[in-house]
Image (cartoon, rainbow over all chains, first blue to last red; front, side, top):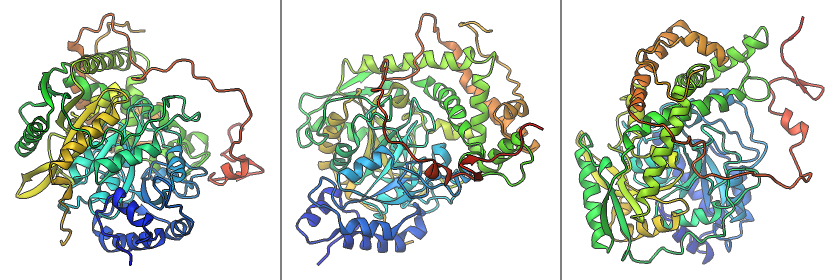
Length: 486
Length: 103
C-alpha cells in the first residue's frame, strides 16, 4: 500500500521508497492529486509536466540519495524542455534549451524536477505580487502574501504540495518566504551552488538554495546541489562535503551572536517574542550567547538597492525581443523593437529597478552611488568578518514582521524594500543563512509563522544545519501545518 | 568626472524619460511621473550613505573573491544553432531577423 502523506519530509519519503512501500510513480500521482485539490487556493505552481515526471519516475533509482523525490523548481531556474519565464511576460513562449546545473545535479542524485514555482518577476519583490502569472496566497491566511521572491516555492512546501523546492536568494528571497510560510530555507554561501541556468537578477548576490520542511532535508538537498561548476566562474572549488555530517551533534561549546542592531524597536511584538524565546531555547541546549555588533546594518538596504539594481539593469539588457522571448508586434524599426518589446514585456517593479540601476550607473553618478555603495559593502562585510571571530553563528529574526496582506505594500516600493532589512546583509557579505520556523505571532487576530534566521561564516552551512536541527528537534513548530480548510 | 569623495546630491531631480531611453525602455507619461516620485524617495533613503567616511576603503564587487578564473582551452559541446533559433521570435536562413537597420 502506498503511504504518502502531505508534509512528509524527504528523509521519511525516501525510507518509504526504499522499502518499496511507495513507488516513485505512486508518489508523483499522489502529489499531483494533492496539488490539484489544494493549489487552486494557493497558486504556488505556474505549471507542471505530469507526463514527463511520471516517465522519469518509472525509471527512478531509489537507491540514489534523492532517488524518486519530486522537487519543485522556481520559474527562474531552467529545466531542459520546460518553459521558463522568471514570471515575466517578456519570456512568454520561452522553452529552456538546457538544464541548469542545480537541476542537473538534482537529477544526478535521482530527483525528479516536477513543477515550476511562482515568484516575483525576475525575483524582484518580497511578496510574489510582481508575478506576471498570478498572486500566491499564504497557506496560513489566504488574504496574505507568502513572501518573496520565492513565494511559490515556500507556499508549496508549507501547504504540503511539494516535498522540497528550489528557490533563489538575492536579498532574502529564500529565507523571507520560508519564514512567512513556516518552512526551512537555506541561502548557501556565494559560490557554493552554481548559478548556471539561473536567470540572472544581480549576479554578485544571487544564489540558488533549497526550501524544505525540515533542517535535515535542507542538508540532503545541499549534498546534491553544492559543488564546483566550470560553467559558473564564481562557483568555488571546495572539497566534497556531507552537509548532514554535523546534524545530531549537540550545541555545547558553540557561541551564538546576538546583534544588538537587529533587536530594535519597531519589530512586530510577536516576532520579537518568538525570537527571544528561541535564543533562550538555544542557550538551554548548550549554546553560549554573545552580544555582538554589526554597526553598518542600517546601511544595508541602501547599499543593496544600488548594487542590485545596477547589476539588474545590465543583466536585463539581454531581453530585447531579438533572440528569445516576446517581441512587440508594434515595432517599426530596431530601436522601437527594443523599446516596445521591453515596455510590453516588463512589469512595473522591473521597470522601476532598471531605471534606478541605469541612473546609479550613469555618467556623473557612478562614483556617488555605485562606487560608494561598493565601499559601504566592504564595511558591511567586515562587520561579519569581525563578528565571526567571536561567534559560530548569528541569530536574528528573518523578517521584522509576519506575512502582510495582499496589496498592503504594492504602492510603496521603499516600504517593501525595508521589510528585507535582516536578510539583505548576508547577500552583500556573501555568507550563508538559514531560516527555520520558531513560533507564531498574532497579527490582526491571525496566528502567523515566525522565522528564526541563523547566519554563518562563509562555507559554514553544516554548522548552521547542526544548530537548526538541534533547535528543531527540541521544538514542535515544524510539525504545525496550516489547516487549509478555508 | 566626479571624484571618489563625491557625495550624493541632496535634491534629486531624476529625468526618468532620459533614463528610460538609455535603458531602451518605452514608458508612458504616467509611469514617468509615478517612477520619478518613487525613485526620489528611494534616493532620499540612500543618501544616508553620505554619513560614512569611506576614504581608503576598497570597493567590494564580489563578496567571495576568486581570481583569474580560466578554464582549459578545450573544445566542448555547445548548443546547436537549431536549438538556439527555436526560441527566436523571428528567424530565417539560420539568422535572427530584425527590422531593417540601414536604408
